[in-house]
Image (cartoon, rainbow, N blue to C red; front, side):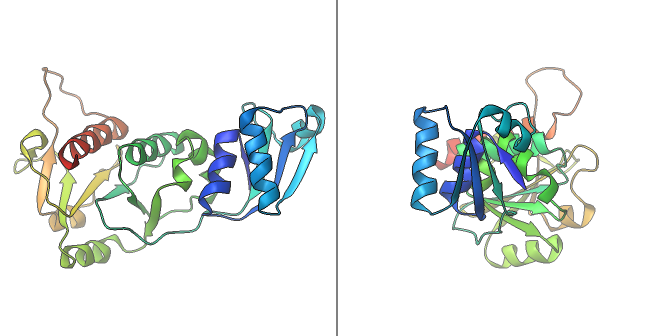
Length: 233
């Protein structure tokens, strides 16, 4: 696949979550970012193609590549580090998912589970919309989320599901457990019933106004991860 833009290319080169086969770069550009990319490419013995703008336009078809792109493999999965885990279930739009990963990584979350699907066709968009965080954060695909969550419970994680129900607790009144796993569902179907039943606690976001509509997935995630960051400091 082809990824485009300096941020995406640097993320792929520096984080080593995928193979970088070759890099295409505008031969006229000598900025700090571009020279840094050239330096890494040469150090890693990756094929470097210095091209004129017309040649580059034939290879990089997007409108926002800024003069650099790369041919890369799909991203590999990671092992997790100690720390909090977020499970994003059914956030399907690559821009919303990318924005979510950017917020999580920026605020210190290292471990993210994604629901099972083929992400390979959207990885270029995910890299760009996440500002490179897609290749920085630790990612795993939940092949069997129910069994996976049971395993995390056995490891001592407390499972929180973002769900507005009769038994839900106001998130602003909760002190999160030392080992916490948060489940957030997409806007179309939310978290599955099986997973909700596994949760130790359901949480809802109380509003400071009479607004009656739900927050979108990205906005809700921002609330959760900001509160988590405050408590973990």
